[in-house]
Amino acid sequence: MSAVRMTPHTQTVLRALLGQGVDGERRSVVLTDGLYGLELSKLSGLPNGTLFPLLERLRQAGWVERYWEQDDIAEVEGRPRRRFYRLTSKGADLAPGVLAEVMASAPAEARSKFGRPGLAGGTR
Image (cartoon, rainbow, N blue to C red):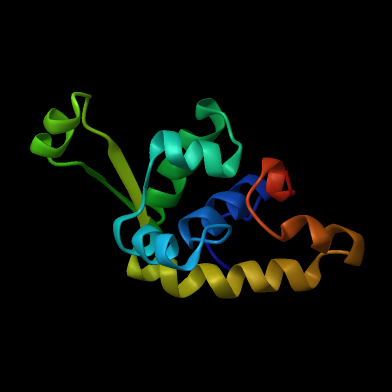
């Protein structure tokens, strides 16, 4: 399947990074610019201690990249810079197929939980 272990948390984060659960205009921004840590935590419902190690594993596998926001943007808003995460071209190519494969192999009663980001891949 892939070098990335598809736990429910991994699936939830990938869905969030694919822009699932956000409106169409926002989805294109998510796919292009990614999400910053707090935003990703809120969308996925995962605490930092779960989210950031998972993002690091996805980064090491080449599925996710991270980058810092420009200083001037943060300064204008009077806050620290944000670190953003987005899918790499490899992640964007592989994630939809792997998620579809996982969903197809899941029992029917579990499939409804995969609709949008939330705790452990469930709904909120």
